[in-house]
Length: 135
Image (tube, rainbow, N blue to C red; front, side):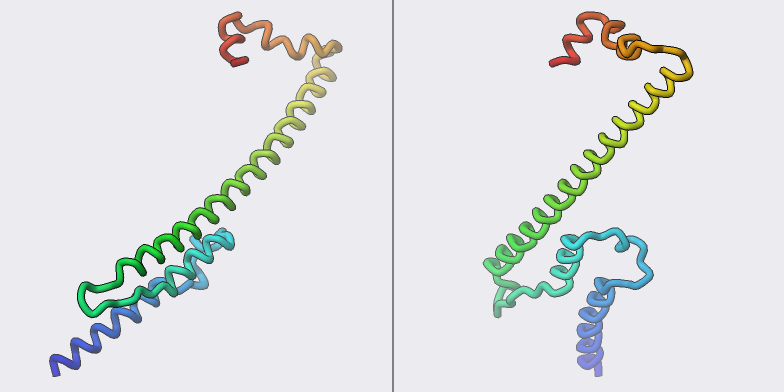
């Protein structure tokens, strides 16, 4: 009887682990995940290591699986970098447009007619600070 209980407990461990890794429909943390992250999650759900008679799992198999996981992480990092670069470019364009609009509003409201009056911030800086900024 005790042996049967041990077997049942062991089989429940695997089931509980699979349930813990299974995607939940109402989980708010997985809403913004890109395709690369989904592939990593799928890899963790499906990874299996080759067992050896003595010593647990095969070391070479573990290293192969780690290399595979590393490739997945590298692709996810590349995708995130590309996404951030696109967001930065978009932000720079928006920021440039907002500055232009703000300068136009200043010209209209303050009566400034010459653009030289608008861009005098560099001349107000001390010489040593201007040199450091240009480097």
